[in-house]
Image (cartoon, rainbow, N blue to C red; front, top):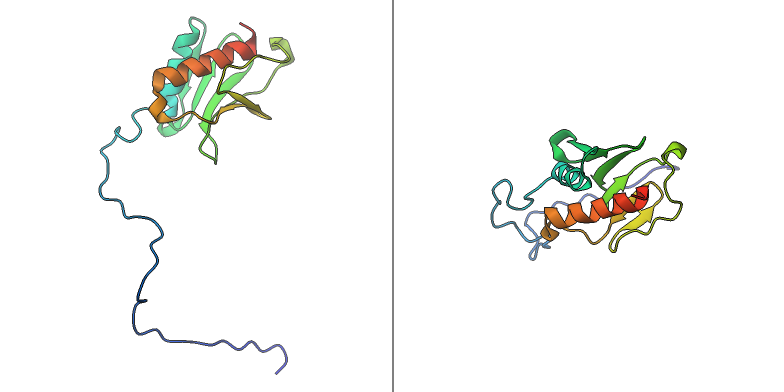
Length: 143
């Protein structure tokens, strides 16, 4: 018949001899706060503290993102992108009068919506990450 699709149906009665192992099984589950001792919201708070008076921060739902704002029109949002990089996204307002080509600190890169820290890791520690972001914010804003 025209347009007929034949399907072959096979019955398997035994499991495969050598099943593939996709991922090694987890041997245990870490208690809360061990695998990730701080949240993105914590990074936002620590960064705002380093920037000093006039800067504030807030954590998003479950601490998975954070916002930082200060004496400028822009709000800076911290988040993790699909590649696992720590990002800070923001909109540049003409009224903020920031430098056109900021000298970003080592380990910080620009992208179309802001900047990111491709090498940042939780093992760097909260203080180091907050220091990097505060230095990046100072470079962006020219302060």
